[in-house]
View (cartoon, rainbow, N blue to C red):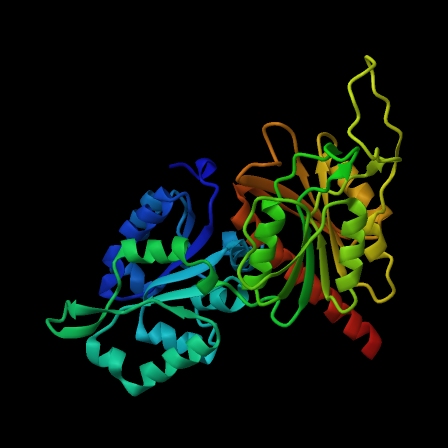
Length: 413
């Protein structure tokens, strides 16, 4: 599978210097079979067990193994890698690496990446059974778990040293199943403690008791954002138009139907919000009058007088002491130009633009976004909406922290 064909989760796979490293090329292959993009980072010890060329062959990417790689570091390559990753997976993870991570050491490329990335970290330890059971290793394990690092295994059984006990790296299939089947458990906490209000889905503007005007939004992107924000530690309120999508676990949902109800629903819960993400496809116009009875088919034409609906997004952005405000722009043409105009015109902190039509955007399982803010932009390439949502939440968290750091610095000065 070529990199261009891969559109799923971006995994930074760290391989440390244990004999179980021989399993790691198979792990790369299995991850890529599931559509993941895998960037391998080797420690010097790992390269003595399995050559970088082997990992390059199975991953389709040049292996990174040196913090002092002049070509990559000319553009601060380790920071780019840290931001690129949706998940940092270390398999095998040696006792030495676990100790380095516990102590917060940046003594090599892999440990530096773990400190610089806001992505969740998953470790698959592998070592001698006596080492695993040593009090210092168990103390490190407890500290890492308290910090949100997920520890998978180790498994029990025969070891290369001839001993038997806990210390074997879990098999690649189990690691892959964990990565793809338990996203909640490996979520980061980049929005921990922040109250976040998100809108999702379409609105319906009634014409008569049986008909309404709506759009093609399925709500899947907004619901994926709500789930990703909850995994990131946020207290999430989801104000939703009518959709057939289950409410994410731990998210409080407020159901609305019309644009006016969306406006009212948002303003009822926006008061103490830290972040607002306007992902709903809210009707810009609504019928001026709603017929009390079903309109019968009589003439050859039917004329509807339409009036502007309330602008929920702009109203939130105009609030005194407003939350960090993120809008969406669904466009069929001139994507960047229209999105940047909306960013400036509505006074937003960030906007996520996506192209929509019959074959893209609405009612599909995948999406891609161009994200703009004052002085910057990022492109989130085509991927499942759950993956794109996690990447956007990470961007929002980074920009939110940067803005508040800038504000604190200005006030202190």
